[in-house]
Each structure stands twice: as structure tokens, then as C-alpha cells.
Image (cartoon, rainbow, N blue to C red; front, top):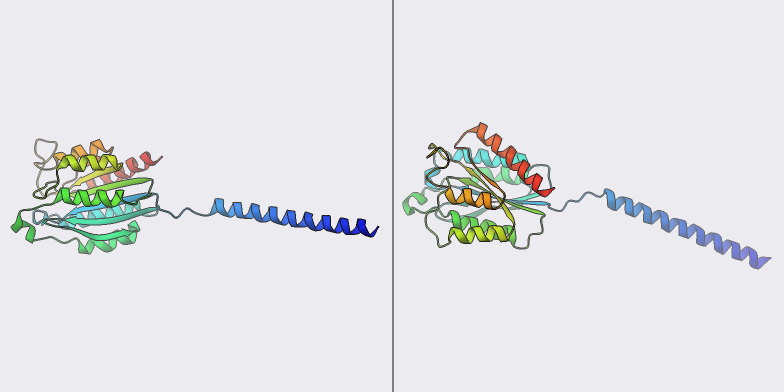
Length: 232
């Protein structure tokens, strides 16, 4: 009789323990499912043209960066900003799109020395941006946005190298052409031909927005649409 009572008590303890473990496992699984994924799902690099020829539109370039910040705010996105003129400089390393991009806009200043040196190192900046997006980056989507007039003068990197690197790294490129002069030939400026090709070959797009706020808003909406549709 005593043995039977001990056996029943032991069986009851095992049953309680089993139920407790099952409940803990269920709770853990529920927590894992509801735990938000805070890892970056999208990496966005911005290149800004600060050469002397942008003196009439440098303030508008800051507006462009702020618009990009607003567009990508609230998503699991990390961003960086590179400026280029007669040199290439990292203005903002990886950060959240809202605070990071808006914090860097006051530092987007004209490089007056670039007019003396006659250099605009666009391809060098593209190379820096692509390498940064490609090296050690595990984001699902990688995007590079180029803001500027679109010309390249100086440097030792060829456009063919840039195009090859962008395609191999699966970086979607977008171009926001900002300048104070009109279109040439009704389609593209005197500069920017290679950037149009780079955008189309990486499933991105180039937009000639000059310094129009209306054109900028329309372009940002289309960029966001294309980026998110590619990720789905």
C-alpha cells in the first residue's frame, strides 16, 4: 500500500514537472514570435556632390538628404553619408536614417577648393560607397543614392569598374540629379549619362529634379516604391 502511495506521488510530481516544462516552452516560443526583429533589413548609402559648381543648389541638396531621411524613417534601415568633390570624405557612418541623416545635413558644405583643382571624384565616391555596402554587410537589400550634378573629373577609377562592382554586389542605385541649369536635349544633362546607365542596370532609376521640390517629392515616392517592391 505504501509503495502504491509513493508511486502515485512520484507520478504526480513528474506530471506537474512535465506540464511546467511544456508551459515554459510555449511561453518562450510565443516570446520569440512576438519579439521584434531589430536587425537592419535595408542598408542605404548616400553620396552628395559638394563641388564648387553646386554653389547655387547646395542648400537644396540638404533638403534632398532630409527627404530621404523622412522617407526611410521608421523602418529597419541603416544609413551612411559620403561627400565628394576634389576628395572623398565619410560624413556620417552607419546610423539610423532619421536622426543620423538630419544630423549630418549642416555638414554638407561647399568645397571651394574643388573649383581650383578642377576635380569632381564621383567614381571614387561610388567606389567607396559600393565597398561599404558590400563589405561585411548582411542586409537583405542594399541601396546607393547619388545626389549631385552627375559629372566626374579626375580620379583613376573607370565607370566600367563601378558598374561591374554594383551589379556583383547587388546594390540598387538611384540618382537624384540636382543642378541649377536646364536639361540638354530634353532628356539628360551634359553630365550624368553614366549614372542613368548605372541606375537602369541595377534595377534603380535616375531622376532629373534640378532644384524642384515637387520633382523631389515625386522622385522620393518612386524610390521608396521601387526599393520596397524589390524586397517583397
